[in-house]
Length: 112
Image (tube, rainbow, N blue to C red; front, side, top):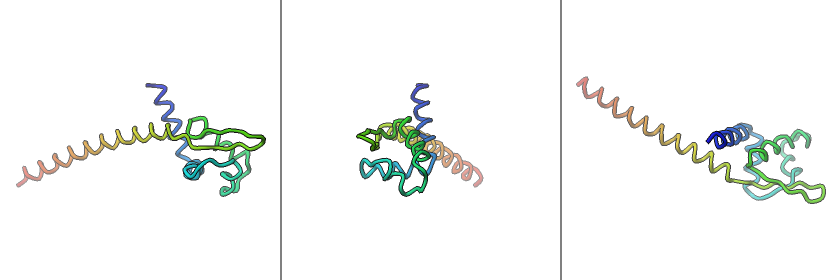
């Protein structure tokens, strides 16, 4: 369990950055070379490469190198783990809010 928690932390840390989220959105359409991924951001390739390293380190993307071209593709498995975590949290809070709603209605009826 601690290893899963560490992995989940790394995924959420990667998703916290808007540049990395934009890269993931682009990779939804298919694999792309680093130069294409970096183009919309107007930053130097070494700086942009750090974003890709974070995404690759947490498993959200994987890369292959052919000659001098490194191509990245989406690896959705870690996103599934984050989605499951968020679904559990949502269910928990919906249950709590439903209980709170029942409690408030009970209080209102007692005042009558």
